[in-house]
Length: 371
Picture 1 (cartoon, helix red, strand yellow):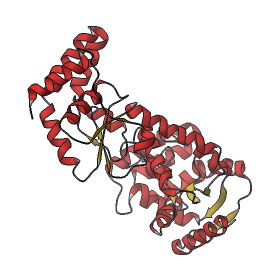
Picture 2 (cartoon, helix red, strand yellow):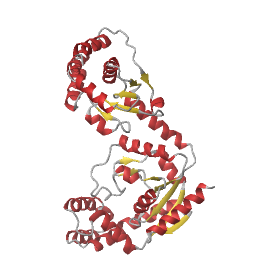
Picture 3 (cartoon, helix red, strand yellow):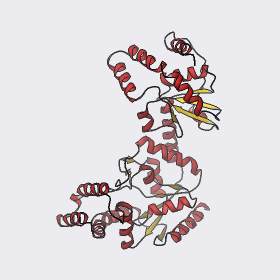
Picture 4 (cartoon, helix red, strand yellow):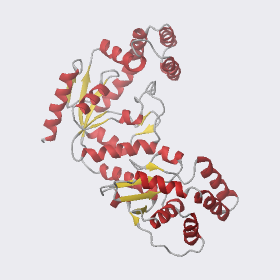
């Protein structure tokens, strides 16, 4: 690739202010086209926070370079920041060209984007266009995609609820049912799975970091696209799942959907919780430390005697006794208050036999979908 040509092109674009015939495309258009590949030229940190699904990260600047240029832009000079950015980028262009050329094989259109359709994406798109690649710059960048997702959520607020909502005491197997339903080919929106959190004070045990709020919402949007007009199974949630906020439209549909109460005997609930949070073969040390920390967070909701007994049972690995106390003195009383909010339920099933419960839920789906 001719580096002199690259340098000349960028000089023309940004310093002489002459126009270059660059193809641009809107997010509304490119999301409905086939054989399109998205190239995210933002820094790895920006890409990790959220991106357009399927986008490949080929950054103009790495994280340190972006931070340095941002500092220069704000504290020294906009012109100096642009000149420094130009100097950094020009040396990377041949490698970026080869990468974009390689990953775009088999695609008819390449859509380049940065944060808001600014210098990063425009300079790269300009150069790649000169190299005869089928390049488009995304108008408005990632920010346009973000607005597209939020507009979709706003639109869904005004539609009838498509949700079949699973309720039940902690440990009754709601997540297992959702996974089994999804495996059976049913439409399932597993909000806790997308948030990497089980939705309670102990919900993050063993699950690692949660995605960013933007990435969480993007994952929800992507699921919505696949559902079409079908009724969807979802678990009843509060507005927060760990540190992530459930979109307002989803909370609205959870409240106004078809409500199914899931029943399971306490002994089976205890075993399910041990299997999920602690593992029957022995609680991992990392999980143990997280559980102890979470337990301290709910100390004010417990009597001193109950709290001390729970700590003792946990430290001696008397897990059945620990979970039983936790259900009796924390989770079940809280859920009884939550249950009153919904009053009666449209359906009730027992999850002791998972296959039977799944069949019953599929029957409910058929019945409600036919109305």
